[in-house]
Image 1: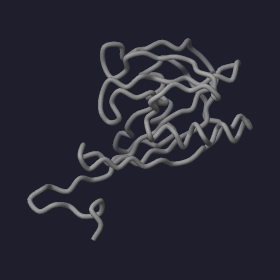
Image 2: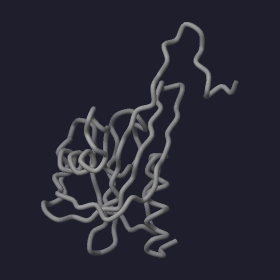
Image 3: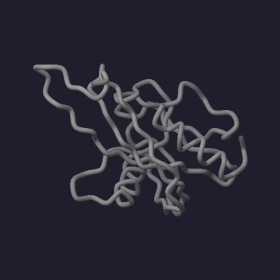
Length: 150
């Protein structure tokens, strides 16, 4: 058995959690990123998103999370990809569904200041800050390919 697929004796099993994320581009082709103050992936830049609540659809969850975190009303353009984050040392296992979205209302502002999000900012796809949250990277790479900005 591999180290990642086995649960040490005496340790309760950790179930994977489901998350969602939104790649949000503005009219200048910049992506909205948030600095994470909390685990998972604390002290990294990430696309906005969060966990899916019980009995909540993935699309409803991403729309809700973006409104709660950054005050934007969004519409989903397409499913970009999935991402998986496995960090046994943090007892974290996330499966995230990432969407390409567009803003249909609101102005981006940090509604979690002093909480989960330290700051937010718009960044050119070809000049992203670091470090990036590992779960955000597949979505950012997918949107770059979509817009041929590799």
